[in-house]
Image 1 (cartoon, each protein chain N blue to C red):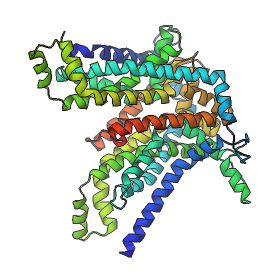
Image 2: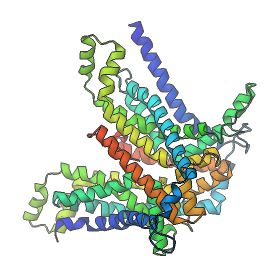
Image 3: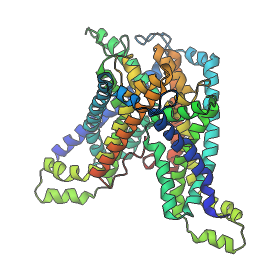
Image 4: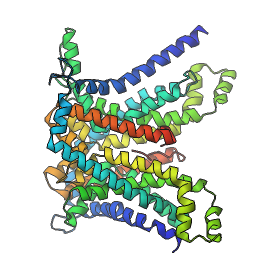
Length: 271
Length: 260
């Protein structure tokens, strides 16, 4: 038996359980429940109501990505600077929550933000009026940032860590002030990390469904929630498939776009 | 000198804030799992009641069983076919191997929710009853690439002549496989298996769409969370957190977390 045949069970499994199911999505997206060809599923989701949901998902995912970048870049930069002797263990501490089930993390966030939750109790104890947090877009974005921040820090840190430190020294010797060192040397060199960080945060943020549902008790409705509803409670798999297909195409296009911005990045590998 | 000192302190404070943001919710949740009161607002004393309740709940114990069964079986199957896949792909011509590698990226780039509904469509269409067996098939599909990508680098590091030498010295191909190749790549296999186990234990989205009759622990957490917060869920979350941490420490000992 030739050695390449060892890969056949693997190939068979991947075709059967990843490629074929995706073909089913395409097929359902273009058919009626009785199996006839149609484009109605797509014209249905071109209505304002659906486009608004799509827009909300993109908007909140963008907020989340921007915040993660804003908080995560300095985090990665400080971790990669040579100031901390135990930076390695700090990095592990940042990564560890990434591996905790996202439902548990979201559940922990719920505990903090609820009307009778930890934060409101603390505020009342200090004589401040309580605040409505669950159910707002802010709570959903906070929950997403909480879940995805490590995915931004890690790739940027990896790139900055590999950077040749003498380049920074050279920039300083040649008269850059600290701000110029960052903006002219560090930032441009870290673009690959930023690109894969953006991919790793934005993609899951656009497609999340449980985070919005749990942190907004249904007030914030995103594409993921809509797909869940079409498949689970409304049992309209054809429209559900067309939404999934549109989302998949959007994601493949944006990965392609990010690859163009930075052809060398290994972005989007892990989530 | 003073300035760099102050800059370092500021950087340290910033990192401390980020870590606090990441950990305070988890720590609060763990603390509340030991709180007597059902309310999150007050601490009325230490108790292990929620843990006792957890172990008395038939539903949660059933979910624990499903989670472990699926994780163990999915790890076993994906470790075998993933390792064989990596060995086979190394012997292939590059065109064919590239097709397979790209196919392995597919479950990693497809959003979980799309992977979940795509499998659901296939199971609905073929009228396969959706329970832990369909969940298992789905888990094998997303676990196997992790095994493959852990084993492939080890194979590349290996001296390719070793296999040929074993054959020349009279090994059958099968003997060469388990006497020469497998021992060389075993660290990669173990890392891959641990990763696969963690992924399977941790999965919610894909399981949610591929199983109706059986629930895993993450599905229980989701349905409980939709009803509101319950202290037994804090206890469950704490135990799941500890389990995942223990597994990760095991993986980290082998390979260093950052390299995953």
